[in-house]
Length: 422
Image 1 (tube, rainbow, N blue to C red):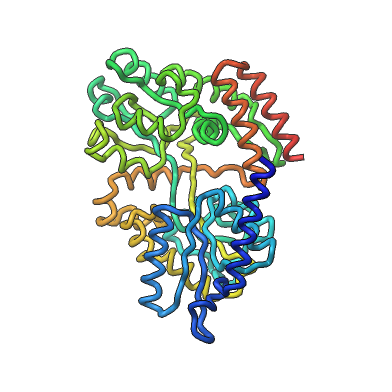
Image 2 (image 1 turned 90 degrees about the vertical axis):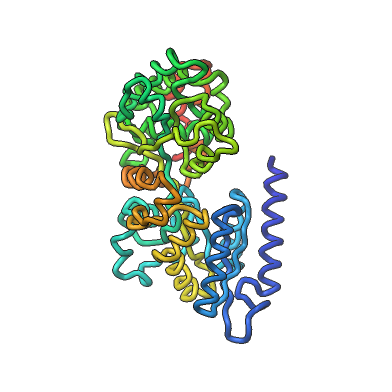
């Protein structure tokens, strides 16, 4: 594993040096004297494709060039970090998954944008999306801009709820009651499905339940409280949901959840908005027109969906900060966010676009997604989140498969997380 990580790091350094030596970092390979070509590091896939098209449009309108370099998720983070650590300056902008934000901002990898946005961002932006871009969270300086508004939602079979005269769930108690009825009475259908695979999958799936019961991963002193009474109640509920899920759910990740959902094997689950296109695809889905969406149910607290925005930051080593800010403003403008959404490049972070008729005609889940964003919770704002997630996910998985009981498992997880933070 160490050798593999070293090899990847060495490869990234070589690529960065190639960018610098060929002049890509400042656009020298394609630019005329005095002309700047910006370079943006983005995640490969629909988001990267939409950013590439937006960059072409930007050049048509302004005459200024932006080169979009798309790469896989893990490579994107390591490349962005090494670019700054090595003072390479290969990238003028970088897309960031929001849990990376504390590591990048507190590690002094990003440009402070306060001087470019003296009055902050306009009121059309969803408050929870903007909060992710600030360090300290919600109230500190602006180190990134809210580009894509991703958030988990609650999927449910409205045809089955109607069949059994049930109302859409508002709490996790409601979810369990509905799931019990459907599991018992509906042939070949389970009431719910948990995403139980160890690590990130189970943590991401469990957190909305944990938050709904009032749980906090870290307290005001940045100490772990995953073994609180709220955590115990949440895990008790999660184990009940497991019993109402298909067999083998302890190893389920996104692919297995999507299959169970689209093939009509389950009635309810938590999922990302990108799955809507799968359930509505008549070529592969047996539940077209039968799925509806809600913000994730609450319990002791209001709905607690997991926010998962993509942010746009400017590395401190960028040699073209003014030009980078201008392009970033273009990307988060109402017009460009709408264009990117229509291209399938990600949901907006502006409230007004969730009622735009062109977008709601294409994305019927937008009203539910806006509600989920407005009632969302951010993952802990700590540079150590990935390590915390690994440890917590290990013990949650052990509890789920019955290797350890709830109290002992959460106590051990809490102690291990405390060690990480100390």
